[in-house]
Length: 582
Image (tube, rainbow, N blue to C red; front, side, top):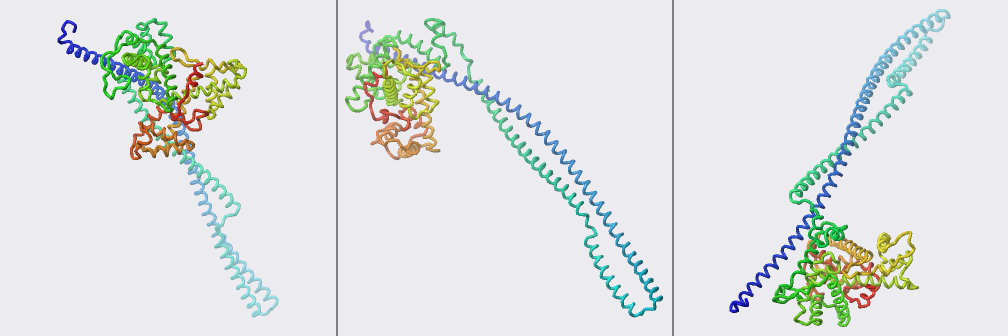
């Protein structure tokens, strides 16, 4: 270009296009590496889930087979008992029929015998009467009349006797009847119980068959998913190979990779490799002045790489937050971080060099994904995370530190376990006993120790790494937010498209004490519009709505304590930052 001055603009334009293409391809390479990491993580998770499901399924199938064999044996026993009882009932019925026939024949023979006896007795009596009459010479007419009356009485008695025998001749003795009735009732009860047991067993067997069918279908489905995952997945990488390309060798890699998942190891590897590439790059290519480009990156040409270390970037971020908090307090409202980010460096280094610093810091915070300070600043800067989340967290820590300091009356920097627990309950009155116990353990609570050194718990090192207590408070806040949003989604029901009024009604239903100003800020954040510009007929898909609310400073009203209430519409002071960074 220096030798061919005539073509210098053309050659510069060609070189600029090459630089833009190379930068675009590098960004695309980074995004593809992130996708590869997600695929590896998903493969590991699905492999573990499928192995656990197969193991549990084998145990359940073995148990169900044993139960099925036992139930089949029980059913066979019941059937045998039923057959035996039916045979006994058949024999008893046959015996009763034979006894009834024998009694009936005996009754008829007895009737005939009685008739014959009566006839013989009558003839005997007539012979006696005739003999007596002949001997005594009694009146024949009188005797004939008496005989006639006696015969009438005898006939009447005989008729009554025959009627009684006809009606009750086939009746068995009461004792035998009661005995047979008792046996019959017992057998009927046993039969009914056996029938009920059989029906229950049949129902259980049908249920087990249905469950077995469902388990078989699920097993086949999981097996097919396993085959699909095995075809699509790649082998688990050997992370120890990374020690050969990481500066510091195996010793440093062991320190960096200790206790981290595959996804976190990819971030660590990308950070280490990206740091080296970032330091080798002397300049960045400007992204142009298009309105779609963030305001702090709107420039053309090349900007110089300041080659800052992680400590220097974290220190600058802290300085930006302090100046922004002071600026917002002075103005009385919260400004956008993206605009303040550019103005900060314009005031400090001038318009010419401001983009050198903004590009350098932006590339660094985009690279260090495992650094929470840089990641939060990056998300707030890009507008995907509500700035109120940062201020709310700082305000919580400030309130807790003030409470602990107030409890430390002798200013020793230490509190007893009871004093520390009481301060936690005062600042977080809605937390459960389990959550308070988690915070105590994160603070270093031990049963054998009588006190906790609380000042060191709020220390943040030069690279932005916080202590375990601060991390645990953040994690609990995130869990509480997720629970709160799950209740909100349940209240919204099956709606796929949500209007502002629907969202307002759902918030009021699950959190009646929510102030109107805070509720308006929640809805404005969800629809990304000020309250005055909200259209009641506008709708938002439920998935996008829940994602935005998850990235906002959303919390249940009763969980908020002290000065942290209504944080979305307030600004924390510089005293907060000073009290946290002890």
